Length: 380
Ligand SMILES: [Zn+2]
Ligand SMILES: [Zn+2]
Image (cartoon, rainbow, N blue to C red; front, side, top):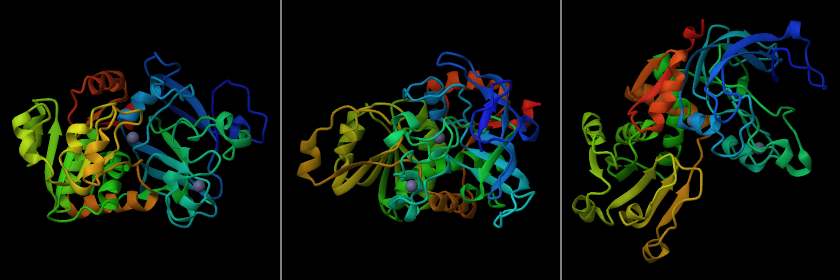
């Protein structure tokens, strides 16, 4: 299962010739300062344990922007993002048993993992310790061959093309079922934003009555508020943007401006769990002070070095500062089902693929208080 740009030379190892390949079209960036543009390419057809799907909707995640702009210094170009994908199965491989043609399915951040390391054996594919770690839905394996032990290339691929496209080929084990209670476009962001926030809420045992803080009220943050609230927690959102206080009000959530000392002071030592969803380096010290003894602040938004932590605050009250990365396949299915059961989901705005570059600009300016979802029918 590999992709290649049209008119490029076939790779040396065994691949179907072009006539057997699936024609695909999507939007990709060719270098770190290029806009996303229409891009035609070929996908290898489904093998026995894979399915082909028509992509219907794809959510726009902040990490798509980081990746397109090479802000994590690991982008492989061309970069065709998209890992919040909802589609309909158009063909199944011979040994596929769990899905049928016509099924509405989801694909999140992963399309494969080593399957044999300790995390994979215990169902945590998202923490795969195989030589190339997990295979991301776009931008190839998390550990590229050049950086892998012995230059291993266990997936035989160095780049993958994601969901900003008309079709996708995925192993059946990495497909999620979209519950009938959620509209397809609304389900898309649950596949990354949903599980990224649900997984730590579950892991750190958030239950009814707990006091939970959510830092940041963007794509991840607003969904985290809804999930924690549906779990029965007493939720407070923290933001640096005064306008977002109203957004929190609409979600029925108490909100506090981080810079409002008078409002922050009485909240000290009162929270059971705090989740930070801010997508870049920020100061978490004001939030560590808000935790009760023995409680945890988990960071899911920023994947980079953070401002230094004052360990006096951490040590004196035996607090924990933690991180969490997306979620495993079981948690992804669980959060989809949880959202359907509770009638919740992200606030979305559906856009055409032509709007994608403008959408990136607005997300980067922090103007967006919902999730953009691309209607892939607009690819034409
Ligand atoms: Zn994402
Ligand atoms: Zn593994």
